[in-house]
Amino acid sequence: MQMKTGVEQSVYAVLLLNMLPDKAVLHSEVISGQIGASPTYFQKLLRKLVSADLITSVPGVKGGFRLKKDPEDIRVYDIYVAIEGQQSLYSPSGILSDVLELEYDDRCCVLGELMEEAEESWKAVLKRETIASLAEQVESDRFVNHVTDLKKWVEENMVV
Image (tube, rainbow, N blue to C red; front, side):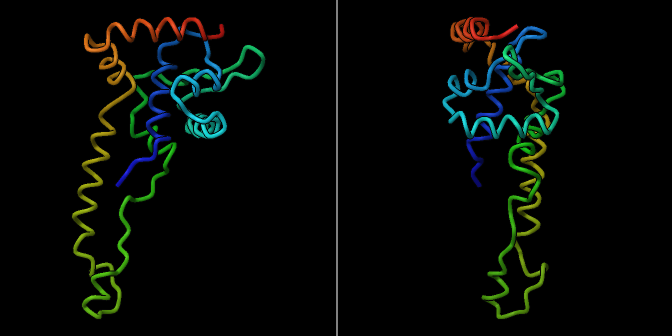
């Protein structure tokens, strides 16, 4: 299993938006440049986040993006689902049925229950972490000097 970079880029974009004061926005080009994403691809990610009601788009010359929900109410899982959708990570292909020369049947996959349990555990971890909890980690002593510079960058690039 490998998560696409769009999820990671989206989480960090939302973390940047979390640094904005009320009513301020960041342009998509500014965010995509900061996180190293293709502007065209990044626009698609932002549309998905808007559709999921996690961020809002402010139109116009002084437009851009900002959080729509409180950071405590945005779970990492919400961002994952907005970008990747809710499809299961595992889909049996019937290999065991073929090996045993049986008619394919859902019960013929010994990995099914194991993968379902693993996926539920993975989802539970993503559901417990929020943008607020990640922001707390980013603002910890470990990153203090760099966060100060990043906040200055946000301040210089935001539109009010």
